Structure formats: C-alpha cells, structure tokens
Length: 205
Image (cartoon, rainbow, N blue to C red; front, side, top):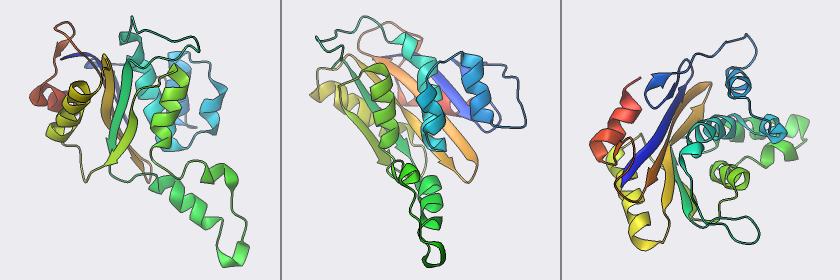
C-alpha cells in the first residue's frame, strides 16, 4: 500500500503533499478563499455545512491522484472507498440546528437538518466523484494513525477496492483540522502507507 497524495487544511494553513499552498485570504470566509484558489466550479459547495466544506476541499486536492478506475454504465466506480474519522461528528451544525427549535422561537431549519450527520461528508465526496465503494465516518477522541491505518488495511483485505481516501475531518467552533490521504494498492506512490508516515502527514505542518 502506498500514499499517492495527501492534503492538510487547518484554520490557518493549506498543504498539498507537505508543501504550503499560498491562499490569498480575505476577511470573509477562509474555506471560500480555498475554494476560489482551487478553481472549483461546484455551486452545491455553498450549501454545505462547514465540516463538509472543509473535508470536500481537502478531498478535491488529492482526488486527482486517483486514476485508472473502472466505471460502470452509470459512470460509477466501485474501486474507491472513503474512510474518514473525526471527534465532534456534526456538532457544529447540530448546535445551529438546535437553536432553530427552541420553544421560544420554534422554526426547525430543513437546510440545517440535512447536515446533522457526520457521514454526510463522505456522501458529498462520493456524489462529487461518482464513488460507489464503501463510505463511512468513524468517531474517535483524536487522530490516531494506528486506527486509521488498521481501517484502511482491513478495507483492502476484505473488499476489492483499489484506492482508499482516508483521514481526519474535524470542524467545530471555528476550529478546522483536516487531513485527506489517498492510498493505493501496490508499490508506487509518494511513500509507503505506514502508521509512521500517516502520522507525519498529520503532524508536519
């Protein structure tokens, strides 16, 4: 297994394969600044919650490293899985949604309710890239390279996927902490997929 690309997005930094990406920052929206810099044209982005926006952008940066996948007649590929971890689930949006259903001003927001599950992030990535492989978001207290490594290894061992997009996707109270890593079966890529290398991808910022 080899890492083919990795990206890192925090509240102040953007890196691709360990190299800083210079983003012209405005006073409006850091994630929108990144979106504009990447030249993406995907209007649905602006309807996403902050967790989905951050994870979506990190995935956009590394997905070009996934190539040569087989697609069915509907344009879907079963060759790629998405396995993400985070700490706060969708609490950022859950809190905002809860504020719309207080007894004093009862008006539940269906726009917010759409994003009150953390695995919506993996679904958004799958929709964008036409992925029909396994997609899941696990909850953990912190980023643990050994846990992510084992989940990816198990996925390769028990399914026929060729690529896995894995990592850490945390966004809560304005704190952004995202790592997206593409891993491929075989012996070609940036570096071997090991717990140590995965930890370095997260730590070296």
